[in-house]
Length: 467
Image (cartoon, rainbow, N blue to C red):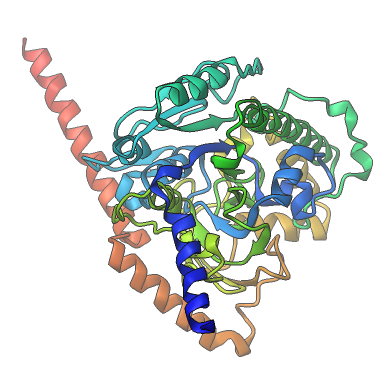
C-alpha cells in the first residue's frame, strides 16, 4: 500500500509539471554589464537592490551560471540561440563567423503557442526577429533612461487576450557605461568596498559609485516589470528569469574570462513549481532556450545547451560536468571550470591583456586605468596588480569558491600538477569536439581572410580604374 501511494504521489507531481494546459508565460529580465557580485543577494555592499533581492528569495539562485564570452553581443546570441559562440557565429563584439540557418528563441517558442517580444537592448539579429515592445531605450551608450511599462503591459495583455502565452524580454541598458544615470550622490565613495584586485584610487571609487547608481536603476526597472505580473494576475503562472549579463567594464571583468566578468546572477522563479534555494550546479546561457522549450512542452531542440529542468525540479544538483569560457578579442583566452576549480589558458603572450578602449579618453573606465598605470611606476604593490592584469601567466589555476576575484594563482604549486594536466586535457578535448580552433589556427585563419579581403578590394579598385 505504501509503495502504491508513493508512486501515486510521484505521478501526481509529474503531471503537475507536465500539465500542457498550464503552459507558463515567460518574463526574462537581462541587465547590461552587471556581474554576479553586484547584488545584495550575492553579498554586495555597494548597491541597494531590494526588488532583485526579493525576487532571489522567491527563486532558485544559480551561483555558478556563466556566459561563454563576457561581451554583450556574444552573451545575448548565446542566450537567444541556445548555441555556443563557435556555433552561432558571434565570437566577440568585434569578431564573428558566418553561421547560416541559426534559429532564435522566437523560432523555438512560436510553434509552441508563444508570442515573443523584446523591449530595450537587443544586440542580436539571428533567426526570426522579436516583436518590438516600446518602452525602453534600444541602445546601450545613451544618457537617456525613459523606461515606461505601458508597452510591456499591452504586449502581455494583448497576448493573453488572444489565448496565447507570452515570452517577454526586458533588455536593460543598465549598468552599461557611460555610467551617468542614477543617483551617484547616494554613495559615500570613501567607504565603498573595492574588488580585491582593484587599486584604490579616486577614479576607481568614482567608477564603482557610478556603476552602483546604475545597478540601482536596473533594480527599479526589474521591480516595475515584476509588478505587471501581479497587476495582470499572472504571476503564479509565469516563469521569471533574471540574468545580470557580464560584469562591469573594468580590468579582468568584461572582455576577459574571469569570474568578475563571466559569472552571472541567474534567478528562476515559478511559484508553486520551483522551490527557493541556492545551487552550485554549473549552467551556461545556452541552457535557457532548451529549458524554456522543455517547460513549454516542446521536444528537445538539440542545441549546445540542455534543459535545466532536473535542477529546477530538485531531482539533481548537478547540470554540467564543466563550464567553458572563451575570448578572442581583445586577447585570445580559454577557461574551464570544474567543481570549485578554474583553469585559465592565456597563450597570447605578445599582447597586453587589456583592451585599447581603456586608453580612450571618451570612456570613464579609462580614468581609473590611467591612475593605476601611473601609480605602478612608483608603487610596487600597484605594479604587481597592473602586471596581474596585463601579463597573466600562461596557465592560471584558481579556487573560485574561496577566491572570487582570482588573485591567488595556484598553478605553480606542485600539488596541483595532476589537476592542471587533467583540466588542460579536458579543455582541449572539448575544443576539438566543438571545432574551436587554438590561438595559432584562429590567427592564421584571420590573417588569411584579411589577405583575401585585401585582394578583393585591390581587384575592384583595378577594375574601376580600367573603366
